[in-house]
Image 1 (cartoon, rainbow, N blue to C red):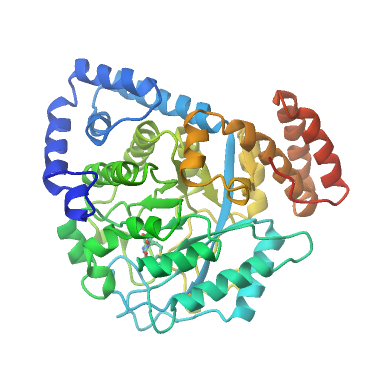
Image 2: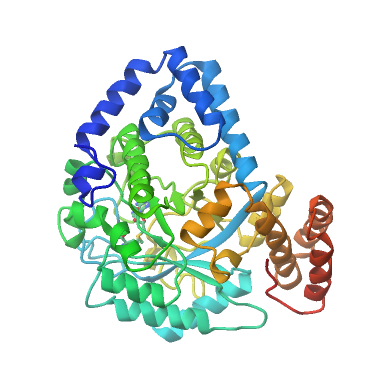
Length: 470
Ligand code: SAM
């Protein structure tokens, strides 16, 4: 039944194969011989299949679990170094015709204020985001063919890219909107989007249909096959994710990796990113009402096992999580985080009092972007505002090829240094700037081939020039 090459969701996410995988993982969770064999393969850092990775996820042996975490850290270091890419979500509209039971934007919620930004308001939001220092956005919208048609999304993308305020610019717009048609994905591709992100929410079809009782999102197959249509529409980079808490995490983990295997089998390139959201409190949503919630330790284990299973896929953690939780996960594989986020429509330009707020979920990490940047640097990370791969056509399989051969450092490290310098010059507080300048000095010393060129560019950035990249 399981067929990663199939174009039917029921075959590339095979329920029977997931059940068999969970059984196999359960039977072998203390089998040192099998666990060690899988770990040896994992150490080659070329990834694992869903069965192998599921055994590691189930592993109960304390010593081997330590090794799993250590290996995740190692792989993270080898593929991504100390860089962390920053982004912010931009909520365009919370009109929605779906009935997702975990999301406060569900159609039956009559007391949440509904709002859709005009192009004028988008300008104000983008200027506020540029003034924080952001260069990369993820736009978010509910599904509503009347209020949020594709034309509205396309107009909004055009507006976002057009705004040049002071030294600011949004250089990459990622898009997180509902599953749509190949035609519409083509239009998004032509509008110059970066990654198309769509969370599966849950791979468990029966649960999925219950959790999405009404609206177009009810159709599990249409939703699950969305990434295929996105790729057929020309979008090279797609981002997966499940919303942890909706079904059992072991089921979700196997399903997620099968989805990655399917994309690799059909398109020759796996997901560009995997996001790790957990259900949070929001307006009329109580996360405790969902019986499959996971604790921080389990969350960390999932992150480590994803890192090991798909070493070349970026991993994203949002401000849904606290600073403490994010700190723990950074080490285990996260390569992108949001900072200074607002999850309400219009929240950057005009934050609303809580009662009138249209937020999608409560943000746990409420620090400013400047605080997040300083915190990252003090932890030894190199914050990056780089968007160069997208601007230089390094997307899809071209990106993966460079990433798999661990050559991506040669681009990312200098680009991270130069975009951090831009941030320090234009937006950082004095204290952050001081920490950042020290870090740049240290990072420069470690560069090999392009050190002199980067030094030259840093001088030019100091003198007002912008947007250098390798
Ligand atoms: N409406 C689009 C769709 O249907 O895919 C995507 C945009 S939605 C704004 C982004 C994501 O937020 C959803 O895919 C869901 O996983 C997540 N989300 C919804 N409710 C949430 C909650 N209570 N806590 C945390 N994340 C939530």
